[in-house]
Amino acid sequence: MNFKMAITWFFSLQPMERSINDPGEKLLNSMRTTARCRFHAAQRLKKQGDFSFFTTTILSLGLILIPLIQNAEIKLAYSDKVLNMMQIFLAVSILVYSTINSTARYDLRSQVLSECGDKLKEGP
Image (cartoon, rainbow, N blue to C red; front, side, top):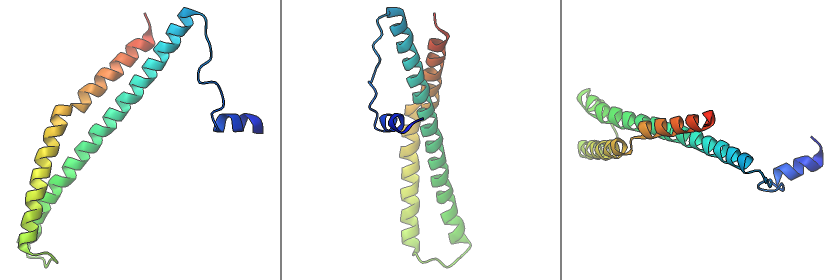
């Protein structure tokens, strides 16, 4: 790749879309673009679902860890009142976050988008 091509590519100086006169080719390009976009959207939803599962797990572990540390009588920098407030905050956070995630249904939406993109790739 020469320098001029690299500059053209780096600064996106190519035309946004090449002009195509054939309606069949336009349809195929549109189908490819739609399939690619649906695949990437499915991947994003899957990552978001994984992240929400990880976040809920970490908050739950924090909620379990605080009373265990208190019962072990380990000297902490925070008073019992502060730790109790942290437990309440974590419990409410878990409740709200899991309610939001259960209504979002990331896994199902990701699967539907992925299947739709696969059907588009197969063609008519």
